[in-house]
Length: 296
Ligand code: PEP
Ligand code: MG
Image (cartoon, rainbow, N blue to C red; front, side, top):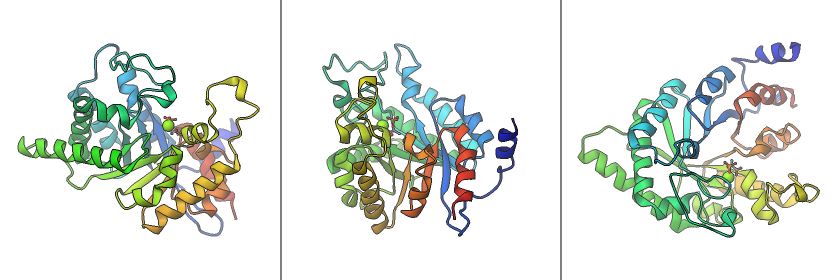
C-alpha cells in the first residue's frame, strides 16, 4: 500500500533522469474500458491502441465504421492534446477474430496477419482508416501499421489511406489531412530496412514481442521453449540499437511498445541509446517513471 502511495506522488512529475535526460512514457490499450486507466495512470498518451480487440470482441460481425469511430473519438477526446497512436488491426497469428476468417493455416504466426490481412481485405481496411481519419479531428491521433516487412506494403497502405482521405473530402467529412503515419518494427526485415522506412513515415515503434520470436525463430507462447527464450538476447539488443540509429538519422521518432519496454532492468539502456518513448500497460507507467527518475 505504501508502495502504491509512493508511486501516486509521482503523478504530474516529469520522466527525467538525474542528469536531465527525458523520455516519454505512454500507455498500451486494447479496449474502450482501458481509456479510463490511461487517464488515471498519468501517461503521456496512448502509444499503442491495439485496435484488433474491437474486432475480436465483436463476435461474427465486423465492427462498423461508426462503431470504431465512436471508440477512437472517445480515446482522442479523453487524451486532449496527448497523442493517441491507433495501430490498424493486427489480426491473425495468435489474435483470431470470428468476424474475419482467414481460413486454415498450418503456421498462423507466419501466415496472414497484420498489414498483410489489411491489404488483402481492402474494404475492411478502408472502413478502419475512415473511422480513424474521422476521429483525427477530435485530438492528436496518428496511425500505425503492424507486422510490416517491406516498402511495398507501406506504399500500398499509404495509397489506401489517400483513397480514404479523398472519399471523406468528397463527402465533405472532416479529417486531419496531415495525420502522422507510423510503422511497427517487429520483423527482422523491418529492422534491416528501417533506414529506408524512416524516409517514408513519421515515427516507429518496436514491438519486441514479435521481433524477439521472429528473430529467435521460437514461438513466444510455447512454454517448452522457456529456457531458450532469452528476452535479453544480444541479437535483439543490437537490433534495437540499429533501428534507433537509423530512425534518428532521418530525424524521426522511435518508441518501444513490446513487453520489454516495461522491464526496469532495461530502462537505463533505452535512455542511453536515446529511445524517445516507452509505451507500457497503464499500471506500469508510474513504476517506470520512478525508475527513470532514479537513473543518474
Ligand atoms: C509486439 O509485438 O511487441 C507488440 C507490441 O505487438 P503485439 O504484442 O500486440 O503483437
Ligand atoms: Mg506484435
